[in-house]
Image (tube, rainbow, N blue to C red; front, top):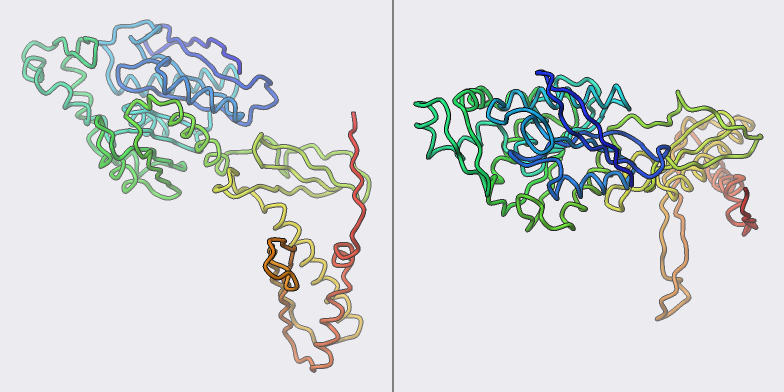
Length: 406
């Protein structure tokens, strides 16, 4: 993986420090994401670092940055608020678009999750939003200042201990988060949403995840993080989050190669080309004039953006069978109105193999013929089905020659 420093200015002209995680080869980048860290944390917190690296390994470039007044970014944290965090996110997205490509994914951890929910509406490029252990509204953090709330209101500012560090919190911060007490922004979200939360999160209750999920419109998904803590301190939890994001988000993103925009490969008649669209299972399939996608289901680590290879095999046999039947019926002027074919691939025990573990491949093909056909005509069409060219190829034990090319 590669890391590149990316700096940009906030609305006050102060320099914010970012780090862009990239795959080793730029041609492997499928999309860009923007990561918002948790309240008073920084871009280098373990969860942000691990998730960003793991996503980069999956082909998703990730920009993480320090909000104003935190980490390596300039500015005074005491002068920031939730509104300024949202502004920082929007400016980070614009910087990413200017220097590389507009992000399609927003990822927010803890209060950063509430921030990405607020920023998404201002970024037209966003197709997918992910929250991790996030509160439904920014007002959730007000409980952190309860014992100093009166002092802050009276004096306008007070020092509050958050975790192991002390921060100056001004009255304007409390007033600002009061403006974000509604889930209305979530209802207006025009992007796919994935909510991660642990049922044992001691910092942000899983009830907050329920509020986010209930407020959002479809498409939306929820994934429980089991025994994970709020900061995802275990590397395995962060890697699981990243792998899931990569599979889930690809369903909603604009692919780099598609039927309309892709350059057609140089092929001869009867030749096809298969190319990788990501480093999991998504594949582009080209003929001389057509483009299709193949993939695997989400449960097997794919992104479910196309039929599986076996689905395509069955489709090929079914399409050929249907074409053959139609061609024969038209030539013989049979009253065939419609043909429907269902196919199923299975690995089953051989019927003549008693008490053994050997299995054979079986394709079951069910044909429905619609029309005023006689029994004799139906029987003949059933015979014709076995004569389709793909059927004959599959039964002929074809020789497959494989060789490497430069």
